Image (cartoon, rainbow, N blue to C red; front, top):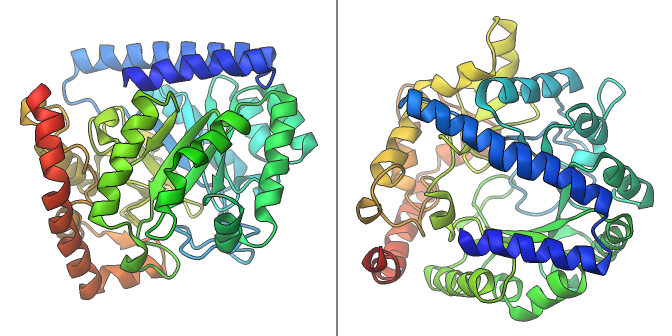
Amino acid sequence: KYAFVRNLLYTTDRHLARGILSKDVFHKMIKVFAKHVFIEDVSERDIVREERTDAVYPCFVVLSPTQLCNLHCPGCYASSASHTSSSLPYSIVSRIIREKVRFWHSRFTVISGGEPFLWHSEGKGIIDLAREHEDNFFMVYTNGTMINREIARQLAEVGNVTPAISVEGFEEKTDQRRGKGVFKKIMKAFEYLREAGVPFGISVVATKDNWDEVTSREFLRFYFDEQGVFYGWLFQYMPIGRSYTLEEMVTPEQRLEMFKRNVWAIKEGGYNYIDFWNQGVMTDGCLAAGRMGGYLYIDWNGNVLPCVFIPYYTDNILEVYKRGGNLDDVLYSPYFKEIRRWQSQYAYGKPALERDNLILPCPIRDHHEAIYEILETQYRIRPADEAAKEAAEDEEYHEGLIEYDELLREVIDPVWETEYKKTA
């Protein structure tokens, strides 16, 4: 945690010196991200936690306002494409953001998709949302192909948005998954963002095929040192969504090597590059189901899911609003409570020496039997799409993930015991 914050500060200083971070944007980042998100919101949640030990205050919300996308990537977790046009109304998205600030002291908002820059509703879009909610800081996951010089200029003008642009490695692997010519469009987007002084990141999916490339030092030097990437998120392929398969997952041995490389990148390399699963130590475990300091996910249909990677729900925010409820109501479903109970039993809130392996924090991927048991309960849990329905009924899929988890523990548990618990 210390190394990551240190890296953010050093990177900010370097980007200001290079002239690829606008001073106006920097001042807005200090006001919104540092003051509101890091200091005021955290302090308010700490006060509430002291007064109410049972309080549940998520740190942020992930919103996918549209499923529409101009690309058709294999393995897409959202099954997005140009014909998947389901979207939320602008007024609903804006209300969700107002309520999370009001109820949870949360002014960090993550926008996903679909392709967020294609979302238009009631005459407004993503940049209008950022302009209206100027006290929120927005991280927008995007394929980058819609970012032109004018969009970059508008992002610099509002100053409270950072795009996280998807890459799969270098040009060959990025175009292989995302389409011919996409890599060159991403390079142009980087150029426009640097010119405008907008901080941007990358979002990477590691598979059995590309994991070595996306964790290599050549990859880090190219994207962070040469292209001016501010931060990066490394997501390991999850077998959900379009044409899900266990075959694309990194092996336990590959995952261990990814962990070692990522620790080097953060602690010694000075890079803000976080492996979402392997760095559960930074988040005190699984963040799902609206955990204190965690998050929940709302998709383009209004379905409220515990996580982007757990495509099952009981509540729908449109239905909640229709019956006179509000955003706070979705936190207390038996489904979400059960996931939070598992988190507490596993690691969250426990003394350091009593925590289970935080390199393996995920209930659907690393402890599939746990989420499988919850999905089998009578909580009226519904699949978010056809792929999720198919997976829920696929015994071979469940058995394969449970077997994968057993192998994971054999490979990763010794690292947890020697490198973390013995030094705690």
